[in-house]
Image (cartoon, rainbow, N blue to C red; front, side):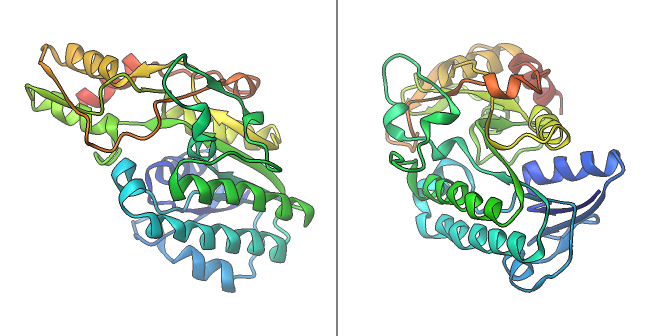
Length: 293
């Protein structure tokens, strides 16, 4: 296939790019940051001007940078609204037959992610007619992007909407929690700092499984929203314990209650994804890989 991949130098994008090349697809990877495989092209400019026809477009380009960026740069993150709107207009103009839109678990209503029992989020928890308040401007932009997908579909593009939960991997920037924990463990930091009180939970899914699930969704013609996660709720205290135990030491845990921490629980019901992809990298294996990298 001829594939357009935006955000091809980012964490998800670069792994997807390599996987697409490995299976023989012809890929145009674009990103603000050039690499030997990626063209330095602003996706916003591309969508405004390009008239090429691709078999598939995968839209990973977005401004995001961990919790501190989401809370600290709301206007920067809101740039995604324009980027996604022009993507949908480009799909309609070029009559691209198939597209993948990377949404986010941040699009889910924050009211469903509060302290108390863990509520595993299902795709239908987002009601486009009466959506709840998503997580900050990043979640708002992704929720809006999902709604715009309906207009691209009306123009003839078959849309898969993927909602990754807490993606992680060995080469992720350490502005995200998982690689930050790995770095602290490699440095054998004691005390070991944790943002918040440590009881918040997340659903960790390895980048290999995000990539595999994406390609299987494309191959099997999956449409509409799909959670990408495992359904396993892991608190930040538990993650710290797993990481430090694997690193061979037991530090004191130091909680930073004033640091940005987001919603309390963010865990998915992965049933729809399990129809076409079974996660193969456990959190424990992912930790071991990252510590060895």
